[in-house]
Image (cartoon, rainbow, N blue to C red; front, side):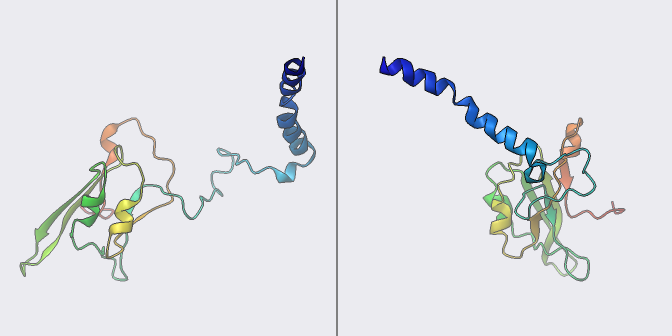
Length: 146
């Protein structure tokens, strides 16, 4: 008999969830849901949000990366390839920084291990695409340059 009444009381537990809905109905200012497509222009992501990877530039407009390869070594999926080259003086410099967004888990290990602060996670969140070739990015290539 005790089990019978216990099951009856548990079956009314939906009232607890329904009470939340009723509260939001009568107090709509408490709603925290983002109306995504409508507020796209004003939508701000949280400061700790991890979007895709991007290169950080110094005050001269050049990237800070020295091609040390620490980010490549720390990436658990192998989403980063740092291809160094040598400049005229024979010093090792960054040739290509290839980032594969389709295999990246946005864990942030690469950003944490970079000793120069040359990379960061940006605020982009609309990353879907139909063509897989758009997910392989050369990060040290600036707009308009080959």
